[in-house]
Image 1 (cartoon, rainbow, N blue to C red):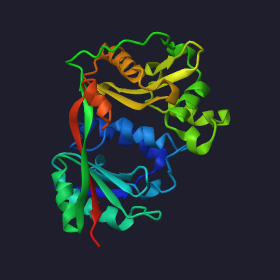
Image 2 (cartoon, rainbow, N blue to C red):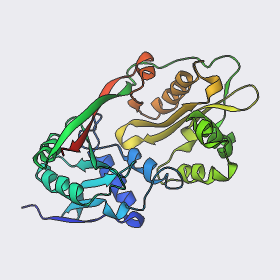
Image 3 (cartoon, rainbow, N blue to C red):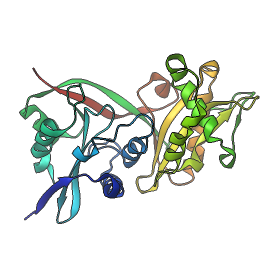
Length: 294
């Protein structure tokens, strides 16, 4: 007989346990929940975009002391995710009810983010009034196929040991168009990049940076190598506006492919942007969004 207990998530004590749990239950289609780096990347971004002030509302379920289920929010705080170990589907209803009644809203309505294959959780969500509002397919690159886009003339890869975190920050600031709405990059914000690069399972030595002839960082591709899952978790990817549409992102991903394939990677994450499909990524993960009916 299973002896199930549940308790709050303790951010100072449980991040490593959650990471291990997500690694243990990982499947390429995310049917048991998100990959471990998804969680660590978010919660290591507390100095920039991630609000961890509600983390005490995250919930853990254990069987004889072993983690078997986890419910947590990401960004925005009203987006709720679930990870559930196979053969513990009977917890789905309790997890959905807990999330509905206790997870933060912060001015928004709660939204469940469920992945294809999380059937028990989808049924549980429906039973308490949630309905699927939208969905899309996220893409992955299968390393059974080579990825080899050339580096355009006039650009070069920056050696990992020479990376300048402030210049990485400026590249990401411009690359995600913050400059257009929030002004110029402030070097004082570099601490957020430092905190990310020193997260427990970060692998910044595998990050790819492409610079132009003047030494300005033009493209950045982050890598969170997860050897237990043979997963090359790519996050984030950006190119500064003046160097877009020159092939830099494809070249950066090709370099990530080379650096991680030799380590044993079998696949790499991407996104839903048509760009990924153009360079050979294939549909892999079905994201679905569920809201409660009025």
